[in-house]
Length: 522
Image (cartoon, rainbow, N blue to C red; front, side, top):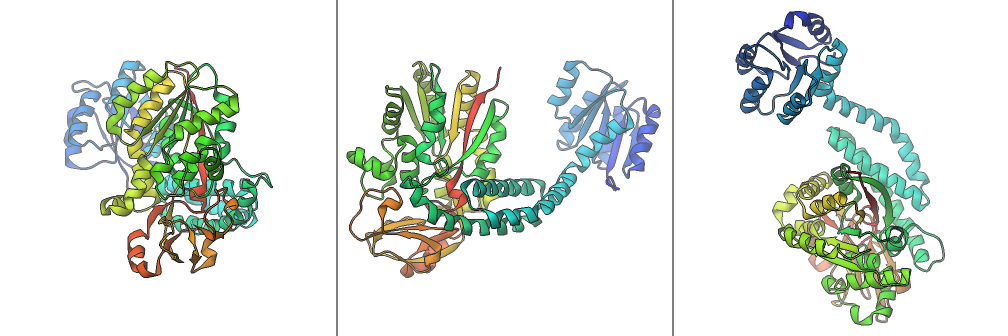
């Protein structure tokens, strides 16, 4: 029986009238003790533990709410269901404010009571069991979908479902099946990398129609939102789909969320992917049109110094007019008040696009490789999700979005690229002029020790890049590989294995969330 060994204390001054209810719970395996007043209930609770307390709100002597107040001080984690004859909002509000786990209004049927008791005491176990059964039933179909994936839509749908399974199984405590999800994801990465290697150069050359790419996000998704009212364009740097999945519920009370996915351009790194978002252009086009803004250095900061100007010029190309842009790049939540003050000033312009870049997730991802503490608390995908949600709950970003919703402003919320937990080193042979990135490298006479682990090209047009030096080779790591030099093999393996990196080709880096947030009526 599902309730076996669970102990319930029912406190009610009319307990004799509730015998059918007590018997109904006992028949389903619950141990139920009944008591008729609050003082005796508190004495009993101090003697032995109970899994749940059903507490009458109106009793002679000490009331149910008073019992609840004492109980919360003595045992903050006790699970309590308040039972009352009163339907007044004030009673319910006070009970909920004191963190009751459930609320019943008399008269109640035995099945209503059982429903609440089962949800509280058996809910987690039932969710775990249900998740396991659902995944087991879906698993053969997922295998087939992986084998048959041939298009952007098929790869995207399968990746999205695997992410959702990982989040759901982890949340329900069914960790035994996560290995099966991981195995499917490993196979998907391998297939996805080979498919991208074949099709991406054709998308860049516009030889075949591909998915929505970074260069088209503003044109396809932001442009239709422009009008007389301000619009927010918010980029949370380096956000994976699973991170979006755990922060989006925090936005649901304030916005209706219209979610989709798009593909980051390659390399999936800030200087290229984010510039492509703001400019609507590939690196080669940016270098051609704005040569003073672009160089072939490896300095990410210098390459992203003109995002606001790139967005203004793209909007001018698309609309034929100058669209006002207010731009903010936020590195720290310590500057929240200053950011919000500047925003209020910027919002005074009619039809303004408020473009905001938040760097916390990217800083956390990079800092994790350098910090043993961050590496420990963010040791895997689930831990990274938890860290992201914990930050987001208290962030300037959420504060800004809540204020935008309150004022009725629409928001296009996205990222520039994701990241992948890298486990496997692959040797690269390079000269000193090669770039230093761990997931992509450019330079003369570059060569990978394991060719199947990388996307390799000598033609910059395959990536939409400006012309490089003669003999330049472009390498992008696929799946969960990261580059190591043969002379620093052990050092790099020890330092970067199990790190979240980006710049290469994997669903986690390429397939990223894009959401239109529509403010809910107040």
